[in-house]
Image (cartoon, rainbow, N blue to C red; front, side):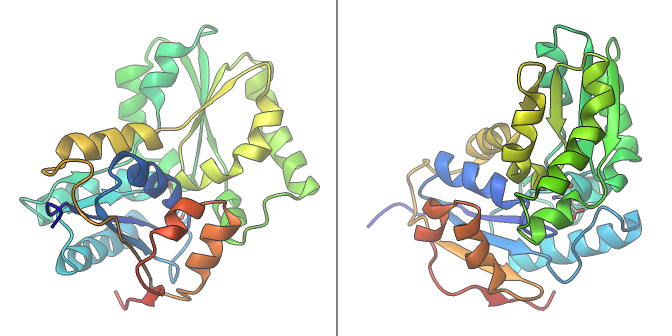
Length: 268
Ligand code: DGL
């Protein structure tokens, strides 16, 4: 019999956290994974802090009731608004948050200018301002809210020439000013890499933290990486059938192969 592994609960407003889940599954192939998509309330990026905090606390509690031994807030917006409150409400359960990779971007930048792409909520958060003050005080940092981008990923409308042109125009000023690292400050934007990469090519590199988050999960895990059965459970607060369909559409075939059962509706 294999040694028991962790059960890691990973959640986001919708599909974005699947980019983080995919890295975690690679780093801890034995861990059982429960992914919760708050599809009844996506996007979070235009909601109030109080609303997001309420959702985060309810979802965290529910994941622990499902047997999770570690929680990953696979959403920059939810981390900024509520990771501290979640840690307080779940003493004894490791909680890993996701924050924009300002630190690695600032370290790697040669031009002294970086940009961070975020939701409207993350852009105005005190947590992001603090992160920038701590790790990039000596650099120019362009904070670019990108309203509508997460919804674009949710609807899986990724290769649309009109959208690519909007993205090009949104990034043009920061690229023209010399930004050489573009931080993906929303987990949904990892799935926009095919749109973003040709736009920044030759001028800047994209910075994503999914692999760093997975390494943090590995450090906090109480079990060897291969312990457990590596089963994936998908839960959603609305329309759960969209999740397995999204795994296929987003090219996450390895995760699809770990599915233990059909995706379920979870009333949270
Ligand atoms: N994926 C989320 C993030 O990392 C939130 C997107 C949204 O729901 O607006 O910020």
